[in-house]
Image (cartoon, rainbow, N blue to C red; front, side):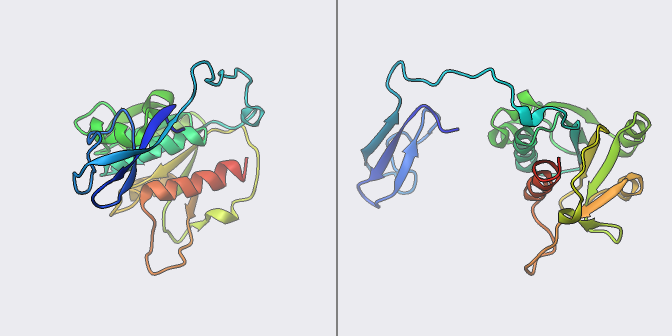
Length: 221
């Protein structure tokens, strides 16, 4: 959601047009050439016109199965933050952070929260050193385990049949280079892959999560 008020400024030297919010570190200086800028447009609500929050529950969330995502050895804090934000948007209730994956309260916190935009406060999370040990325990508790990975057992994510089920599900994502740990693949009930149309063999992990989460929630639940 855009901020309630901000400015659109235009550089008098290079012609750059860009927004300026309260968090902008350049202020009225052009972020490209550092030249002087002029106010082009001021965006903001008049006092007293702020929309009132609604307390009406979203009926689409009623009866939806419990979903969690597991991030195993994700290297990039930016990817982690982006996944947090998407997890919130698609109604995932928990993020399991495993291995070397950066956490919202760790050394890479600044990068995580820069892309999560506060989603780390709306989606609960926990840290675990060994993802395989964690998943074994969750399967005993009744969780169904899905993996997103290129694999001989994988089916296209678009082929997953629409079905409603009360069984909670964990969607597992792996390292940007080595993929999902083979130990986790062995524990997976279903493995999905996203068909590629170009020369590359995979999407960025945060993008891939968004695609899979949309298919498995908005289209299938």
